[in-house]
Image 1 (cartoon, helix red, strand yellow):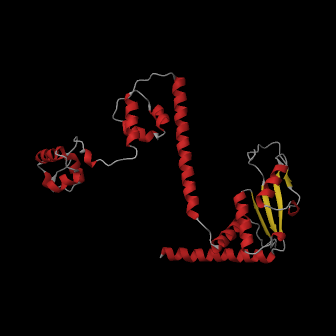
Image 2 (cartoon, rainbow, N blue to C red):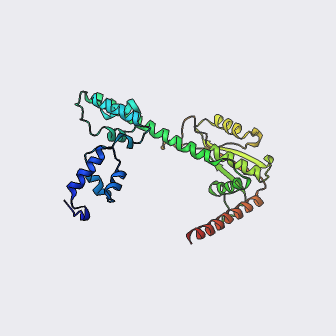
Image 3 (cartoon, helix red, strand yellow):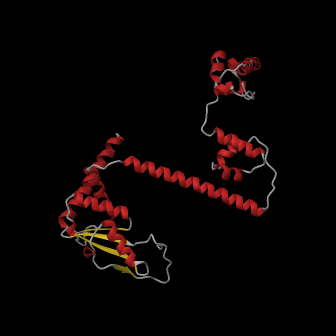
Length: 290
């Protein structure tokens, strides 16, 4: 042996007793308690090669898939074909059938390529399903926002995406720009929360000149349920023929600018609130570190 067994030096005698207990239907815990062996490495070596009794096997939701995967493997199916057929991961299939003989290759390179492609597509589908499940779970965990929570979210959104005053250019005005419709909707909900009337808002669409300008204008107007008179002239970005635009297609609608008229006082409140959030976050961080 690679190392001394100490008080378990009479290994063969112990192994005979352990194997007898295993064949009598005992679990590892029962064998451990009977033989007074509390070293898991030695315990596993004593029963090596002896299958566990059926009653100790826990039911698994994937037992049926495992059995089917082994059946298909014995029929000569490859990992890729099994993956496409059962919709489970390649790593699981490998774990389930790795003790079975490898089937002989009976397909052309083109067939192998097609099967591999379908397997990869199945993998991508599984990944996307997992991605969507994670997003849905996170979305459902939010629940209802309290007024205070919405207020803090709005301040943070503005400080991340809104126009800010500079020491070299005093511009205490509220202007929020974004291409994400969700961001626009949250910002407008925040403005309603703090009492900014819709009559004080002006909207401007910013978009590339060779995009669907009219469609974008209609989209934003419908999204925020605003009269077209609240929109100023659309800002068109000149197209550079030397560049290749990636923001194309029906989903591209440019950005929407939301401006608040007479917003100097509101801007100061936003900036003050933001620095209040920063200060509170610093204090919370210090408390968490101590």
